[in-house]
Image 1 (cartoon, rainbow over the protein chains, first blue to last red):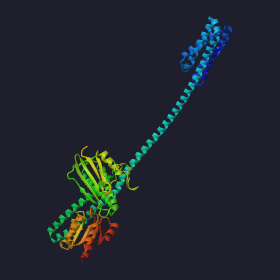
Image 2 (image 1 turned 135 degrees about the vertical axis):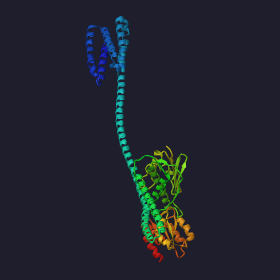
Image 3 (image 1 turned 180 degrees about the vertical axis):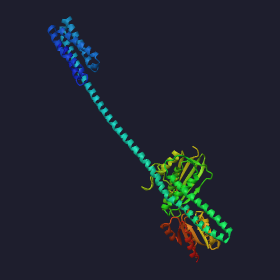
Image 4 (image 1 turned 90 degrees about the vertical axis):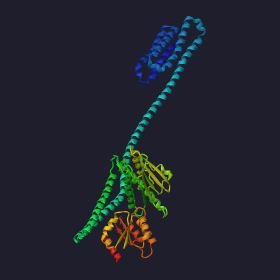
Length: 435
Length: 126
C-alpha cells in the first residue's frame, strides 16, 4: 500500500513540471521539480529499512512536507485546487499506519476497508487532477479568445484611426473646394453684373458725349451772337452751357460710382461694417440685376416698383456683401417672373417690387415678385448649399446659402420667405440698426 | 411739327431742347416729353392728332418701347399715322427686327447722333 504515498508525491511533482513546461515559470522550478525523482530513493530506503507501516508513515510525511512547501509558494497558487486534494490521502494514510501499529488485530479485521479508504483517497486526487486539467483547458481557451479579441480590437482601432485620418483629409479638401466655390459664385454674380454694368455705364456716357457735343455747338452759337452784339442771347447760351457742364459732371460721377461699386463687389475680404444708405444700395443693385438680365434676354421686360421709406437711418454693414445678397434676390425674382412669362398668358405683367422700411430696431428690405413662386416641398431646402432648381451649369446653388451666411451670421439679421406656388415669392431681410 | 420724345431718362429733355435750339426758335419743331410708355399713351389720348413724330426709347421700366409702338399702331391707325422712330442702347438685330415688325418707321441707336436725326427730320418735313 505504502507505494501509493510515494507515487502520489512523485506524480504531484511530475504533473506540476508538465503543466509548467509551457510557462516562463518552468526555468525557475525545473530543477526543484526534478528532485521529484529523489522520492524513489527515499522510497527504496524506507522499503528496505522499515516495515509496511514505517514506510507508510515516511511516505505520508514526505507527501505532507511537499504539500506544505508547495502551499507556501505563490507560484503554485493556481494549482491549489489540485494540491489540497492530497490532504485526504495524507490523513487516511497516517491513520491507516498508526492503527496498524497500535491495534494490529483491529486493523487485520478491517484491513480491506482501510485499503479501500486509501485507494479512494488516491483516486480522489486523480479525479481532482482531471477536473483541474479541464478547468485549465477552459481557462486556456478563454485566454486564447481574449488574445484573439484583443488582436481584433487593435486591428479595428487601427482601421478606424486610418479612416478618421482619411476623413479629416477629405474634410480639408472639401473646405478648400467650398472656399473655391464661394469665390466662383462671387465671380459668377460679377459676370451676371457685367451686362448690367455695361448698360448702366453706357447711359451716363451717352449723356456725357451728347452734352459735350451740344455744348460745343452752343459755344459756336454764342460767338455768333456776340459778333452780332446780342449779349442777352449770348448770356442765355452761357447759362445753358453751364447747365450742360453740370450735367456732364453729374453723369460722369454716375459712371464713376458704378465702376467703384463694381470693384467693391468683386473685392473679397474686407469685412468692416460701414454706415450705408440702404435705399441707394438696393436701388443700384436692382437696376444692375434688371439690365443684366435684359442684356441676356432682350425681350424680357418687367415692371420695377420701389417703395423706399424716406429718412431711413444709415445701417452699419459690409455693403458689397449685402449688395451681393440683394443682387441674388433680384436675380432670383427676375428669373421667376421670366419663367412664369414663358407659360402665363399675354395678360401677365412681370413685376418686381422692392420696399424698405423701419421695423422696430431693424431695417426691413422686401423683395417681392409675381413669378413662379416656391413649391412647399422645397421651401426648407432653398437655403441649403448646392440646392438649385436651375438646370445644371446655370446655378451654383450657393446664392441663397451665401445670402443666409451674410445676413444671419455676419450681420445678425434675418431672412424670411413667404411664397405661394404659382403666385410669387417674397423675401424679407431684417438688418439690425445697432449691434 | 410736334415731336413726342419718350424716355425714362429725364436728362434727354434739355438735350433735345438744346440740340434743336434753332428749330424751336424758328417754330419749325415743337417738343413734348413723356417719361414712360404709359405717360405717352395718356398724352396721345388728347394730342395724337397734333403729333407728327414719336421718338421712343425701347428699354424702359414698365411698358417697353415695343409695347408702346404696337399700342400706337393699334390705337391710332387713322391716316395719317404718326411716324415712330425707336431708340435703343442695345443696337442689336433682335431689337431692330422687333421694332420694324411692330411698325416702326426707323431705328436709332444711343448715343444719339443728332446730326443724323436732323437729316432724317429734314426729309420728313420736306
